[in-house]
Length: 416
Image (cartoon, rainbow, N blue to C red):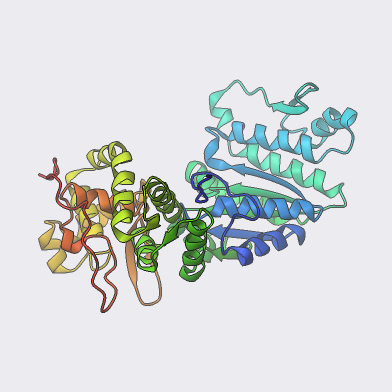
């Protein structure tokens, strides 16, 4: 039997749960040649949304170029990829592709090659100077080239840049300003910018002093609604002839803190454990706790390395986040308990956030720090950094949470 709970890869059309409105907005942005910022924490399914939207937009006749900015070590590498995809997607005649690419990207002087056997194009800028390879100006020229090619087509053309904030982190204020000026001129190209650094992207798009202010619409991802996720999890077990207790499904969502990636990962492991049962093939809370223990044990070396790379102050701040559900971290009681000054707590939280270990969530009524990986809190409980009675689980009003078997295994090192 095939495990129905997939994680760690892009979801194909038909497998993405409860994101119909989000996909539709991305598709509208593409077909109407608009601009959109898709903002959401890591593991929330942004890449899958982009993948499904790309499929639907292509079916509607659009041309889509999609790239992950974090996948390329230099601006030159990203530009090579953009020029290559433009040669593949935006040229009208195979024999004229080299000529068209050379003309539209003249300032870059690309060398374009076609592999007939593999039916693939490759582009190379041939920049020998490593400093020139990091120049943001290369990207601006590439975007101008795409816009020029798009103007010659009677079809919507879109450029999707995933983890877009990486460009600004590397290029600084200059690239942000120049990118904004360049993109505003391109009325024949749709742009979708996706990113996981929510604090940075919110400031970039909401701060009137920054160049990307009001450049396009914003789509902020939240968690998948629980009702839809619960139904899908139950259905996934039923399709194999298994079952899942409603309390176990609710517990699963609590443990994963509604983060789609973690929900799928824990459901995947729970399904495997249920399949291995000789009898009573249904997911219970006890089996779910066993699934969590296996997941945390498998990722233990990664969590341990992450922990040991933190300073003592960062370890204390991290423990405070896990123990207190990320709230009240600057109260006098919390600072005394974790032996941190207000300034040191602030610096430690900022450092942890810059390394994508935690993230800040802010609403008009609440500020909360969350672990990017909620299962890291289970590891902290397992090794004794977080007391079991103050674990990462949400305590619902009037409900008695079961104690996790991960608690109290052995003490942590480097706390002092």
